[in-house]
Amino acid sequence: MKQRIQEELKNIEATYGVKILYAVESGSRAWGFPSQDSDYDVRFIYVHQRDWYLSIDAKRDVIELPIDDSLDISGWELTKALRLFRKSNPPLLEWLSSGTVYYEAYSLTENMRQLKSRAFSPVSCMYHYLNMASGNFRDYLQREEVKIKKYFYVLRPILACQWIESRRTVPPIEFQVLLDELMEDGPLKTEIHQLLERKKRGEEFNLEPQNPILHAFIDRELERLQTVAKAYKTDHEDLTQELDRLFRETLDEVWA
Image (cartoon, rainbow, N blue to C red; front, side, top):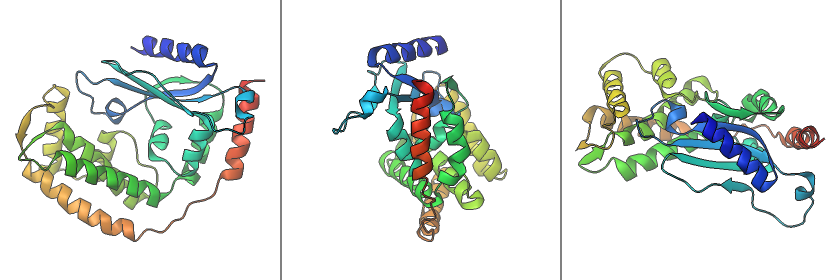
């Protein structure tokens, strides 16, 4: 699959006249809880040639390929990515930490990694993960019978919030790291491990009664974290000048 993904990335460069700077796995495979039939969620950052930027009109700043049964590929144009980085966009911060890198060229992403701790906004990321957990809990786990896979799309953002609360740093992308670092051994952790093994075996679509241990934890943490988030104040450094410079340096490096 890696070879196919890299071939698709080359085709994108040829079709759109761009250079891809960075391409990674995101989603459940990057988070560490893929199923047997999980698709590949590939995300990338790309840059156009100089003339593309010399226009008074806004242009489309994403590239999205049609999704097939196993592959989902989409990317952000460089200035879009840098604007979102300036806002401490959590998915982009996760891309920079992905353990599965399909392609990395030039110095952009290493420079972004060096700036990541300064771009990180605890309040912005806390609300992102909290809203994700609350929304998924409301939409997928309120019925009498639920799919076990949906628990992980609530548990992971809750653990990310706990990490931000306790460490004030960007949360690790891997679910297992969050679980091991933040949760003590006990019935709750055992229950999560058992569900994780079942998900990996392909039982994720099974409908079954709500898990009372997990629901109690989720209810308690969502309420508590809402209170925690409200006490946070915006403490975000403005990196505009440095990111402007990084954009220009990247253009020079790629299209020299």
